[in-house]
Image 1 (cartoon, rainbow, N blue to C red):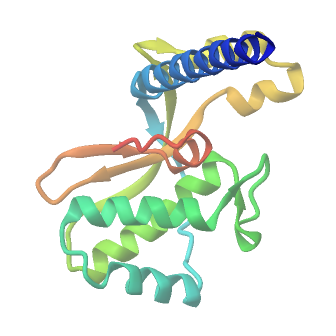
Image 2: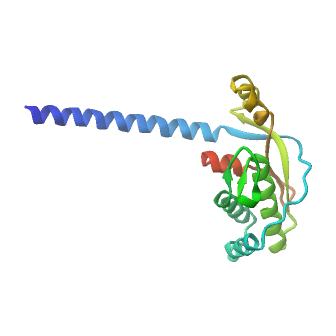
Image 3: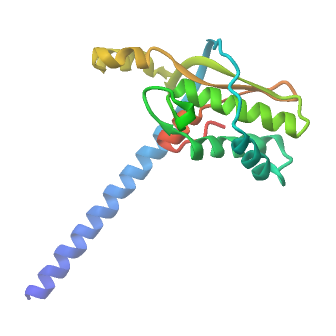
Amino acid sequence: MIEEMRYIKYKTRLMQGVIILGIICISYFCFIHGITLHKTRNRLYTSYYLTESDGKELIAQLASVEDETEIIKECNKYACKKLSFHRKNNLKNKEANCVGYAQYTTALLNSAFKYKGLLSKARPVVGQVHLYGFNLHPLAMTIMPNKLKSFFKDHDFVEIITENGDTIFIDTSLQDLIGKSFF
């Protein structure tokens, strides 16, 4: 009798865990697929130059990649692998906020496009993050402590103008933080 009660209790907890995990997965899926990026202006920046080792690693990673879309994806992955998110930029130590991620990713993309002989161009831009059309920046400004409000004033990401004239926005900082590829 006691064994049967333990089994029922175990089965009930297992079912509760599966249901909770399912709810978390569905919520995460709905959240990340509702995020969009909206450009407000170009970021004035000085070009960031890749280190020699970054350049060699990037070329090795792109050796067998020819498709423009795959080049962009590989550069995204590479930036996320190399950088870690911090409030202040220190690209020499591979620490960056959204501004640093955008600068680094822009340098990676432009180097890759040049290496592959593509006319596509990348540049860092300033904009806002929307969730299902709702701008998240005013919400962040109302709920964040004063010392963090300037951090959420705007957001940097990368604009790519492809060879055929399409505009694509990618955000490696958000991709690194929440795992969503914005492409």
